[in-house]
Image (cartoon, rainbow, N blue to C red; front, side):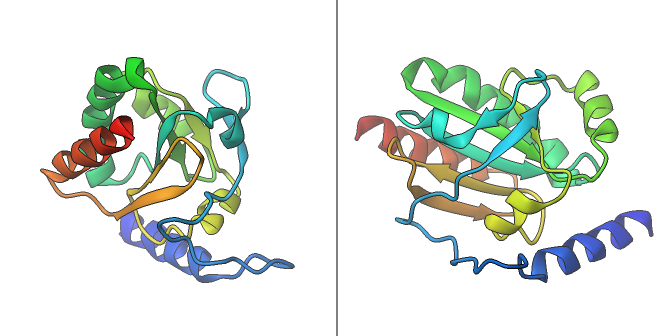
Length: 167
């Protein structure tokens, strides 16, 4: 019941427009919406500072079962390809980061975890469910969008990351 309520609330929030702005649809080939968020290291991370690298942005929540399954796989991808100009950031979408921080103690990752406690970045990226993954090219353009996670989806991520590394 608690999970269903959270999903319902998240869906309702994602459907609301950002007041005072028009949000263009996020699509492949378009520049990625810029953002800066606090991170688990204590230092803010600005997406623009990652230009020049291939970036996987993964929106997740600690209560999301598919997110929990995907996180160790993302960690493996990060370790395998970081020396080739690839990086990733995990964007936690929970209003209170405590649950995410506690969950990461048992499932640590080496890539930055960012905290979107007010859902502003989630709205920019039109996140409607968890997990949601966006892969950016070295110029900061959206190249691939993945909504949800099913076992085996990492093979598609791998193909896309390898193709971008070769560019």
